[in-house]
Image 1: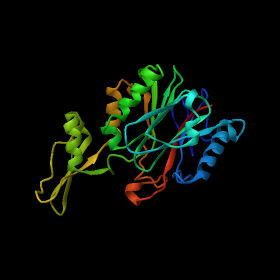
Image 2: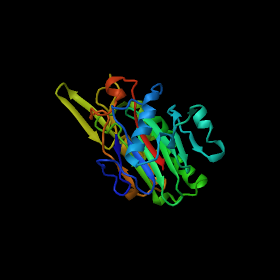
Image 3: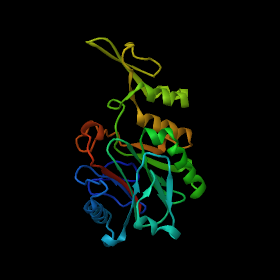
Image 4: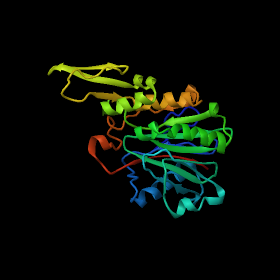
Length: 273
């Protein structure tokens, strides 16, 4: 379990409690797949120990049935009980309430943690290619601006472990889908092609198709890079976006669906103490 220091988001050896925010991410030691209730209790226990809270009942887990969509929900005081009664279909969750651990479970998709310092709002978002394509990040910005009255320029965003551009291979149809939405998105795809058995080249910047007419082109997709681009375009400042630079496919400490077809998931979390 890695707890992050809110000041610089470097790893803290024993965790940290900074301005009453606990945030971080787990690894293979906690399998956060939906049916594993013990993992939820373990997360609460570790937050309690590392952040010096009073007891295990301080926190409630607020999580989602992630459906690779673009729906964002809010935990408000008037309807907070619904999050303990059932798991809601959505891919982003925000609150300004204390004692809720907002949790995202992933195994290659990108978990994002948000902290609006001025308004006190926090959020956790699950972002794969479908959510990104369908504007989940724009919906997240709108939630912060219009529901929590947050100044987007001052919101901190932490990009937790997810698949990197060197490991995320996609087909040409996905490349075409994204550039048809926005031609600038081509810069986040690298064409893979080869003219012979020993000629396996990669061309960055998009726009170059495979030379083989009898097989579809493949591309490396910089999902994290495009996430940052959309965040910038939505008003978040570059200096407030902190990428942990950890790839779930390359790093054996994290679950990777693309690598192992696993049902297991690690957790990324944020909570107000």
